[in-house]
Length: 125
Image 1 (spheres, rainbow, N blue to C red):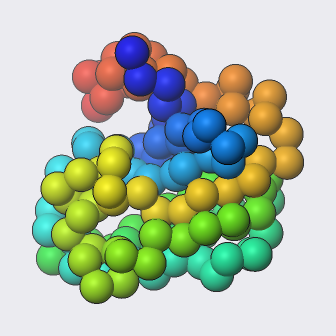
Image 2: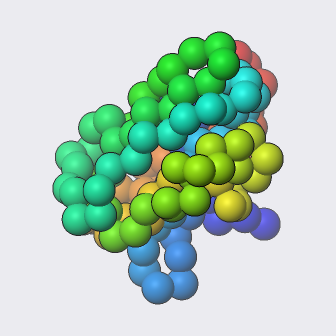
């Protein structure tokens, strides 16, 4: 079973073995956006408060902000998305990740939805 956590804004977070947390947008989000043509990511070392906008995604249909649901510092950025934004469409939970972060308080992740809660949430939209 996957260990992702989800937000109502359709971001996913996954704890990595090194203690960092990866963030991206869900399959549902990328389907709603359509073909993604541009991703603007924050700089490594940037700090964010919970629920801050940390990235912008543009598709052929719309542009949207991606929020980080927890206070954190950016440890790594997926620079592949600059030249290959379509990775978000083809592999949103894998190669299409946005950033890796150091979370200020890991217990904040417990407030997010697990896989079954998120599936139920999306099913009610």
